[in-house]
Structures are given as C-alpha cells and as structure tokens.
Length: 116
Image (cartoon, rainbow, N blue to C red; front, side, top):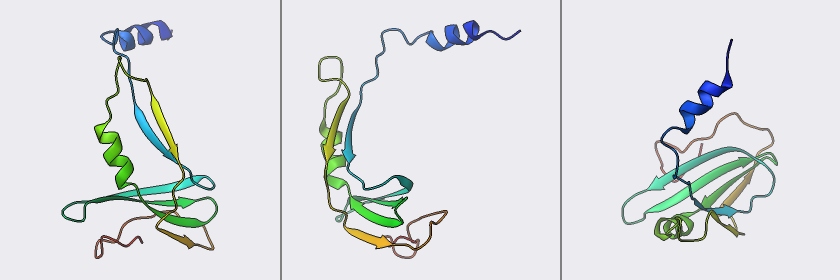
C-alpha cells in the first residue's frame, strides 16, 4: 500500500516560512525554442552569448550580457515586488536558416565565438 501522505509530510518539513522569489528577463523569440546553448566569456571582452535553435529552422545568436548584469544587481525578496519578469524585444546578433532540424548545437572548441 503506497500513500502520498508520507511523501507530502517529508517534503514540507523545514520549508515553512521560506518563500521563493525570482527575477527574470523574457526575451521575445519567434517560434518555439528546441535547443539552447550558453557561452559565458570572461576577461576584457566578457559577455553572455546564447544560441537558440527554433522550430522555425532558424539558429539565432543573442548577446544577453546587459540583461544578466541587470539581474545580478536586482534585490528580490519579501519586502520587494515578488517574481519580477521583464519582457524585452531584442534583435539577435546573427540569424542563420537551416533546411533541416538538427539534434544538437554547441560552441566551437577551436573558436569560442563560433557555434557548430
């Protein structure tokens, strides 16, 4: 005999009073996203670059550095607005059309600014 009662009791122990809060930036993307790959570059040219492969067949490269910087400085908690989501429209840095849908996407190990 399996009971969900035991599971729910153990999950709720110690969680009382802790309310999760989050802050996010939602970047408008045409079509659904099938694959995502992020590259965080360090050093003088520090950037957060994201590649997306959508169900439209487009691979799009986005620079999300400004959004990541803004999110890292935000204060979110019990005394601030809960669950902030900022919606933005941004033009991708590059957009490439593929005739067929692929199964994987990654950044080149030889050239960190190229997707393969």
